[in-house]
Length: 393
Length: 204
Image 1 (spheres, rainbow over the protein chains, first blue to last red):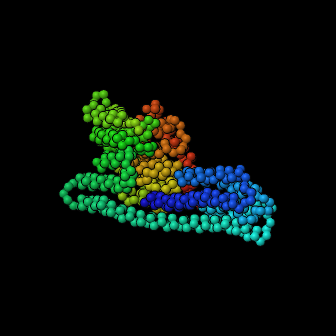
Image 2: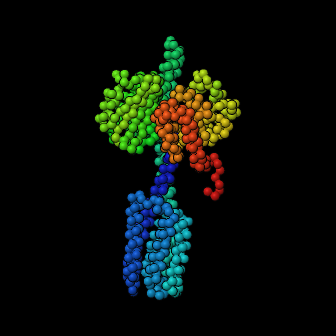
Image 3: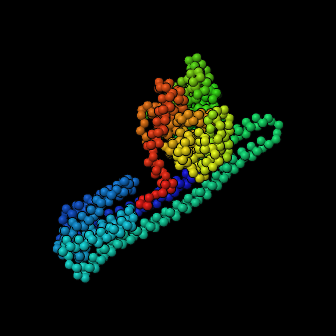
């Protein structure tokens, strides 16, 4: 039972990760939306409009952000967002836009209201990376923002009077607010997801436990009771009673295995169809090793039905005639279709001499032909039999 | 006479394996125990072949395989798990063969004989997993694994590829060795994850 539970823990992490990536989307949307607002405000405040080249560059950056936003919403760019190179480029663009915007201002005016044309973009950058890379990165970026602001004031030759100081503090406080909000929201999202997942897991485990107990009662308990009943007194010879007990145990083991595999069977498909078939034969005392490791893609349902039906015929023949009680069934994807082989190492026969009774010429070949496939038979006395089925996928 | 020990914590399945061994004329039971620790405490240390379950109390899984191989046993894993990772990791740790619990008596006995002779026992299921692992195998080795996965016997394979049975066996041994050396790095990571090997403080 440990495997499914480990899978559930992994899915908890996955859910938290997905929640956080949605938060990053929100931060991205914020920095996309706030910049035009600030630029419009700046255009109203400035005596001389910023050069067109700066506005065009900002337009390009926002377009790139829009593409990124749409891509993230579609579930793309996962690797790009995690790469250090993208992190560096994004910071460089944000800092560069701010420095450029400052360089277009008249000397000494940087600390006046509304001259922080690209500053809001920086707020979006901080909340975006705080969500993606955690509070430490966010704090480092905040410190970087303070340094950037000092640099921009220096570049512009701004004068630090009382109003100038107040403006500087306010601008840094906006950055700190963006960082703080992102930090708190990420923490809340993480906690909320963990709580939801923990609750879901608990409920799921209880339901699973109840179901397993019921199944165990229906199969294992009744089998044990049946075995106890038969192995007690009675007139039947011991060998016969043993045989009965063995048949009951095999039957129930197969039933229980079917329950445990329910999930795969529910998905249907070739592998599940063959699995159900081999279990059915096991209940009749015929062992089949099923090898379906290399199937990619599912054939159409008509092809699956034909392959499973033909395999059933081949295995039934093996059970009747081979005399070994076991066979190997292998399903494998070929470049042009899907191939199923049924191999036993039983008595075998001479295919030229003895045709009657073997379904290859009859129903096996017919079934395969109906879906555009074919069946081949190889056998030799003492060497067993191999039936190869092929169908286009 | 081949001496065989059984390490399996499930009593019914352990008894089943014991019966299979006792019924075969050329096999002798050296001991049946619930765990690796019990096997070593109660003798059975002289067994040539150990039939080993992977999910055991105490030492289990890949470390158990590696431990028993180091003691000189030929380890034949008999596990309920059909997960490709478990199968390939067990082979990587030195197991000479891998059987699922659905295997019938004849195949179990055949596999014990094969590994007692120092050969690798590759069942059809195992062959299909080895085909999927990212190891570099030659075209000939691939052909052989394909045929094993299709249920062909070593004799059939030898005839179809016009090789001697001995050559087929040595190819299978080589595939097993490749799986082992190739996956050692993965195994180390696995051991770290399970806390079998202490993590260095740097990696936090």
